[in-house]
Image 1 (tube, rainbow, N blue to C red):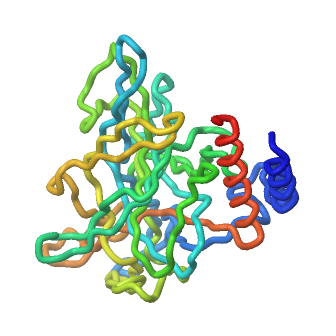
Image 2: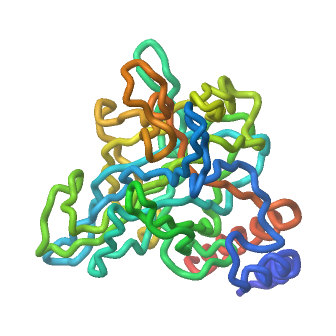
Image 3: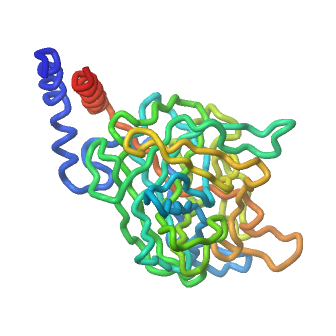
Length: 354
């Protein structure tokens, strides 16, 4: 290692020591480092009064966001993952990198096939394609930064995620709810700009041996199927950017008087093909299917809130659905420490290649 690289490494270690030391403690997100910059709380056990004054409890539901990779019978490698994705839009008030993502989800009918676990997720930040004359609804567009995070303890820049059970099976949809915390890979933090609409896509990735074949867009009941949970629309997101329109606003009121908070546009589900590639398979370029395979999502009557059996009456199923997730950044000087770590890695890599 050159003297320049040694000096850089020493400076990096000094400035980021607090960040790294805090990361050695198990926490989600990392204690003393992360700053919350966008939040759509999950629906866990939300009480809502219906039109007759009866109080009911709602646990929300999930929509499939899982892609399956079939191993090549000769090499064992997985060239493509295919399946369904869910995505939602966001915008906040800070020009700062996203380093940590939290979200919530469930397994369909609580089935977790031990032979086909979810040990990795695709996390993709994508540009916004707004609604327009030739675009019937807004949806995710060009991938701006994507990566795969792997199951394991989290630490700064680790590229890993944790899974934690936070609620047993909901009596309506019979699914337990899990919380996920992911630390993005070092050097692959998303450089978000404030007051700008982006899309977040989170997809569970399941590896399948070549001896098993099925339609990845319609997986069988015995296969692990993971879904992304919906937001608790009774809770306002105070961190959403007020500069985008319509932004965070009350889009309606349920018959019992509960306001419905919603950010920007509908969450979207669609077909996805993910081709593997990049350094160590960490970067996975996203190849979209045609627009007709994307569908805006709405809440589900009686699972996400009061429904209606009366034609023309308003139930929660009439309203656009948000997904449950939170985004975290690092305040200074922690951001400087992460930047130095990333720069040191680049310089050392160049040194070894020369």
